[in-house]
Image 1 (cartoon, rainbow, N blue to C red):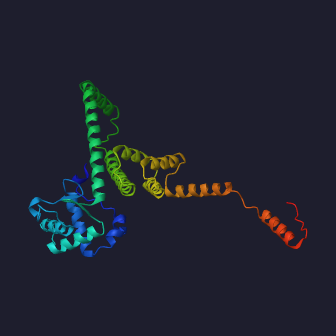
Image 2 (cartoon, rainbow, N blue to C red):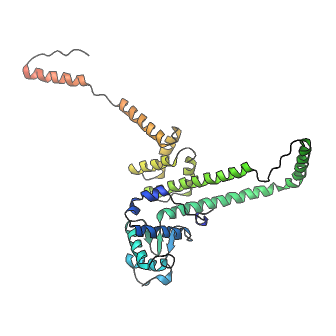
Length: 309
């Protein structure tokens, strides 16, 4: 299901509460922002609000940011329980703190846009896989007319043979229902982790990940926590190597080393520092002592004996 079709808005609570940019905004702007995200969630272009032509002022001329804010405030006042002035002030502050962005007639939240693209990509892949599965099932339907009577006869015979024990089972086993629910929860949790990694990649590396990169990262999530992948992206950025090939090199190394979580990362880093320390040349304190003795000899004309080591 595409993200916009879901009846709820995914809110990463920890990220929301710790967002430094949003924390600089007023309570008024934060309230408007939450309403904005709800509207963006239902937009055709996920995470984006398009300014309608009828709300544009001076549409034939280049407009300032303040004028664009006024236009959006006029439009949004029809969708929010706030006055136009409140919305206009909030938009100006949210844009000033880079919580939201404006490009032309598009007002958008970057993370929501990235999540929407990822969701659409996954929904498209799922529909293709479903169509293929249906095609395969259709090709196998020729066995159904023969298999069904046999299965019914077998079930009847088994019921008679075991007539001492009668068990009534619903067509939908309880275990199957539970497993489906658990599967839904697991899928949602995995989607949220993948979206979090994709958003961090886009913001840190500076480009949208391709479908191939998305698929590769999803594969790494089978072997390690999302925090490990995010840490690998941060290392690439710190080394000024903002390229997927560098990030993937780190991930391959960690996967081959059995790294699954940040505790493993810390342990491997400590092992590396220890090996590096052992490999470094050790300072010979006796060489310094001998040099000092020779200096004293030159100054005083005395011969100083140094015990052999």
